[in-house]
Length: 212
Image 1 (cartoon, helix red, strand yellow):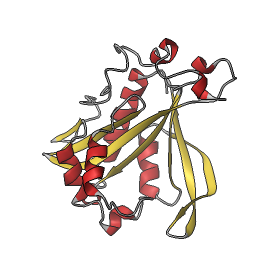
Image 2 (tube, rainbow, N blue to C red; image 1 turned 180 degrees about the vertical axis):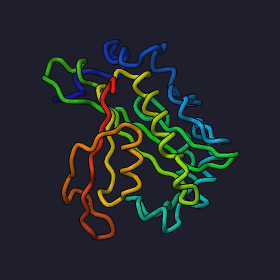
Image 3 (spheres, helix red, strand yellow; image 1 turned 45 degrees about the vertical axis):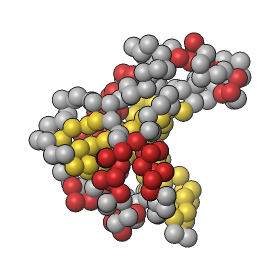
Protein backbone atom coordinates (compact mmCIF):
# COMPACT_ATOMS: atom_id res chain seq x y z
CA UNK A 1 0.00 0.00 0.00
CA UNK A 2 1.08 3.58 -0.58
CA UNK A 3 2.04 5.13 2.74
CA UNK A 4 2.34 8.53 1.08
CA UNK A 5 -1.46 8.75 1.05
CA UNK A 6 -1.20 9.79 4.68
CA UNK A 7 1.39 12.47 5.45
CA UNK A 8 3.71 12.23 8.43
CA UNK A 9 2.10 15.37 9.85
CA UNK A 10 -1.37 13.84 9.74
CA UNK A 11 -2.69 13.84 13.35
CA UNK A 12 -3.57 10.16 13.03
CA UNK A 13 0.06 9.38 12.29
CA UNK A 14 1.42 11.76 14.92
CA UNK A 15 -0.65 9.85 17.46
CA UNK A 16 1.66 6.90 16.91
CA UNK A 17 4.16 8.66 19.17
CA UNK A 18 2.90 8.06 22.68
CA UNK A 19 3.27 10.63 25.43
CA UNK A 20 4.78 13.21 23.09
CA UNK A 21 3.78 16.76 22.29
CA UNK A 22 4.30 15.85 18.67
CA UNK A 23 7.13 15.57 16.22
CA UNK A 24 8.99 18.43 17.90
CA UNK A 25 10.22 15.97 20.55
CA UNK A 26 12.67 13.95 18.48
CA UNK A 27 15.04 12.49 21.04
CA UNK A 28 12.53 10.15 22.61
CA UNK A 29 15.00 7.32 22.99
CA UNK A 30 17.88 9.21 24.56
CA UNK A 31 19.17 8.94 28.11
CA UNK A 32 17.70 5.48 28.66
CA UNK A 33 17.48 4.05 32.13
CA UNK A 34 16.73 0.38 32.60
CA UNK A 35 17.17 -2.28 35.27
CA UNK A 36 19.22 -4.15 32.68
CA UNK A 37 21.93 -1.47 32.73
CA UNK A 38 23.99 -3.23 35.40
CA UNK A 39 27.39 -2.76 33.78
CA UNK A 40 29.43 -0.37 35.88
CA UNK A 41 30.24 2.86 34.04
CA UNK A 42 27.87 2.17 31.11
CA UNK A 43 25.26 4.66 30.01
CA UNK A 44 23.16 5.18 26.91
CA UNK A 45 22.96 8.68 25.52
CA UNK A 46 22.20 10.81 22.47
CA UNK A 47 24.59 10.98 19.50
CA UNK A 48 27.00 13.91 19.35
CA UNK A 49 29.74 14.99 16.98
CA UNK A 50 32.35 14.20 19.65
CA UNK A 51 31.08 10.63 19.98
CA UNK A 52 31.02 10.26 16.21
CA UNK A 53 34.67 11.30 16.04
CA UNK A 54 35.51 8.74 18.71
CA UNK A 55 33.75 6.10 16.65
CA UNK A 56 35.77 6.97 13.55
CA UNK A 57 39.01 6.17 15.41
CA UNK A 58 38.09 2.46 15.25
CA UNK A 59 35.39 2.35 12.55
CA UNK A 60 37.77 1.03 9.84
CA UNK A 61 39.36 -1.78 11.81
CA UNK A 62 39.09 -5.10 9.92
CA UNK A 63 37.25 -6.75 12.80
CA UNK A 64 34.64 -3.97 12.55
CA UNK A 65 34.21 -3.68 8.78
CA UNK A 66 33.91 -7.46 8.63
CA UNK A 67 30.27 -7.08 9.62
CA UNK A 68 29.49 -3.72 7.99
CA UNK A 69 28.06 -3.42 4.49
CA UNK A 70 29.66 0.02 4.03
CA UNK A 71 33.42 -0.57 4.18
CA UNK A 72 34.87 2.93 4.31
CA UNK A 73 33.76 6.44 5.25
CA UNK A 74 35.28 8.82 2.70
CA UNK A 75 33.76 12.16 3.72
CA UNK A 76 34.32 12.06 7.46
CA UNK A 77 33.15 15.64 8.05
CA UNK A 78 29.78 14.97 6.44
CA UNK A 79 29.56 11.62 8.21
CA UNK A 80 30.10 13.17 11.64
CA UNK A 81 27.39 15.76 11.01
CA UNK A 82 24.90 13.18 9.73
CA UNK A 83 25.71 10.69 12.49
CA UNK A 84 25.16 13.25 15.24
CA UNK A 85 21.90 14.44 13.66
CA UNK A 86 20.45 10.93 13.23
CA UNK A 87 17.50 11.48 15.51
CA UNK A 88 14.29 12.63 13.91
CA UNK A 89 10.71 11.54 13.38
CA UNK A 90 11.52 8.10 12.00
CA UNK A 91 15.21 7.56 12.80
CA UNK A 92 16.72 7.29 16.25
CA UNK A 93 20.18 6.51 17.53
CA UNK A 94 21.39 5.79 21.04
CA UNK A 95 25.09 5.55 21.88
CA UNK A 96 26.67 3.25 24.45
CA UNK A 97 29.33 5.09 26.44
CA UNK A 98 31.57 3.24 28.90
CA UNK A 99 33.61 5.39 31.28
CA UNK A 100 33.45 8.26 28.78
CA UNK A 101 34.38 6.23 25.70
CA UNK A 102 32.01 5.43 22.83
CA UNK A 103 31.78 1.61 22.71
CA UNK A 104 28.68 0.94 20.63
CA UNK A 105 25.34 2.06 19.38
CA UNK A 106 21.82 0.99 18.48
CA UNK A 107 19.60 2.57 15.83
CA UNK A 108 15.90 2.38 15.16
CA UNK A 109 14.14 3.11 11.90
CA UNK A 110 10.36 3.44 12.23
CA UNK A 111 8.83 1.87 9.12
CA UNK A 112 5.39 1.00 7.86
CA UNK A 113 3.69 -2.34 8.21
CA UNK A 114 1.31 -3.76 5.64
CA UNK A 115 -2.32 -2.79 5.27
CA UNK A 116 -5.14 -1.96 2.95
CA UNK A 117 -5.30 1.13 0.80
CA UNK A 118 -7.51 3.73 2.41
CA UNK A 119 -6.58 2.64 5.94
CA UNK A 120 -2.99 3.86 6.00
CA UNK A 121 -3.30 5.32 9.49
CA UNK A 122 -3.66 1.75 10.79
CA UNK A 123 -0.25 0.55 9.61
CA UNK A 124 1.95 3.61 9.08
CA UNK A 125 4.82 3.53 11.56
CA UNK A 126 3.85 0.16 13.04
CA UNK A 127 7.23 -1.55 12.80
CA UNK A 128 10.75 -0.76 13.91
CA UNK A 129 13.97 -1.85 12.18
CA UNK A 130 16.76 -2.34 14.71
CA UNK A 131 20.52 -2.36 14.15
CA UNK A 132 23.42 -2.29 16.59
CA UNK A 133 27.13 -2.90 17.07
CA UNK A 134 29.72 -2.87 19.83
CA UNK A 135 33.44 -2.12 19.89
CA UNK A 136 35.29 -5.45 19.36
CA UNK A 137 37.54 -4.76 22.35
CA UNK A 138 34.44 -4.69 24.57
CA UNK A 139 32.59 -7.63 23.03
CA UNK A 140 31.42 -10.39 25.34
CA UNK A 141 30.71 -8.07 28.28
CA UNK A 142 26.97 -7.84 27.73
CA UNK A 143 27.05 -4.27 26.42
CA UNK A 144 25.19 -5.01 23.19
CA UNK A 145 22.57 -7.10 24.97
CA UNK A 146 21.98 -4.42 27.61
CA UNK A 147 21.70 -1.72 24.96
CA UNK A 148 19.33 -3.72 22.75
CA UNK A 149 17.11 -4.63 25.71
CA UNK A 150 16.84 -1.06 26.96
CA UNK A 151 16.47 0.43 23.48
CA UNK A 152 13.77 -2.06 22.51
CA UNK A 153 11.77 -1.52 25.69
CA UNK A 154 11.90 2.25 25.22
CA UNK A 155 10.88 1.96 21.56
CA UNK A 156 7.74 0.07 22.48
CA UNK A 157 6.99 2.68 25.15
CA UNK A 158 7.56 5.64 22.82
CA UNK A 159 5.87 4.38 19.67
CA UNK A 160 2.80 2.31 18.90
CA UNK A 161 4.83 -0.45 17.30
CA UNK A 162 3.51 -3.92 16.68
CA UNK A 163 6.96 -5.41 16.21
CA UNK A 164 10.67 -4.72 16.17
CA UNK A 165 12.87 -6.65 13.79
CA UNK A 166 16.55 -7.02 12.96
CA UNK A 167 18.46 -8.67 10.15
CA UNK A 168 21.93 -10.03 10.89
CA UNK A 169 24.37 -12.13 8.92
CA UNK A 170 23.29 -15.71 9.52
CA UNK A 171 26.88 -16.73 10.28
CA UNK A 172 27.36 -13.98 12.89
CA UNK A 173 26.71 -16.19 15.90
CA UNK A 174 27.52 -13.54 18.51
CA UNK A 175 25.04 -11.07 17.02
CA UNK A 176 22.36 -13.76 16.92
CA UNK A 177 22.95 -14.46 20.61
CA UNK A 178 22.56 -10.76 21.45
CA UNK A 179 19.09 -10.72 19.92
CA UNK A 180 18.04 -13.98 21.54
CA UNK A 181 19.16 -12.75 24.99
CA UNK A 182 17.23 -9.52 24.38
CA UNK A 183 13.98 -11.40 23.80
CA UNK A 184 13.99 -11.60 20.01
CA UNK A 185 12.80 -14.74 18.23
CA UNK A 186 14.43 -16.07 15.08
CA UNK A 187 11.70 -16.04 12.44
CA UNK A 188 13.73 -17.50 9.61
CA UNK A 189 16.61 -17.09 7.20
CA UNK A 190 16.56 -14.84 4.15
CA UNK A 191 18.67 -16.92 1.81
CA UNK A 192 21.15 -15.27 -0.56
CA UNK A 193 19.75 -11.84 0.15
CA UNK A 194 22.95 -9.85 0.76
CA UNK A 195 26.18 -9.41 -1.17
CA UNK A 196 29.30 -8.38 0.74
CA UNK A 197 32.72 -8.30 -0.84
CA UNK A 198 31.37 -10.18 -3.83
CA UNK A 199 30.08 -13.01 -1.63
CA UNK A 200 26.37 -13.81 -1.52
CA UNK A 201 25.27 -14.25 2.09
CA UNK A 202 22.24 -15.33 4.09
CA UNK A 203 20.62 -13.05 6.67
CA UNK A 204 18.79 -14.24 9.78
CA UNK A 205 15.56 -12.41 10.59
CA UNK A 206 14.73 -11.81 14.25
CA UNK A 207 11.71 -10.07 15.75
CA UNK A 208 10.23 -9.07 19.08
CA UNK A 209 6.50 -8.38 19.36
CA UNK A 210 4.60 -5.82 21.39
CA UNK A 211 3.90 -7.21 24.83
CA UNK A 212 6.56 -9.89 24.65
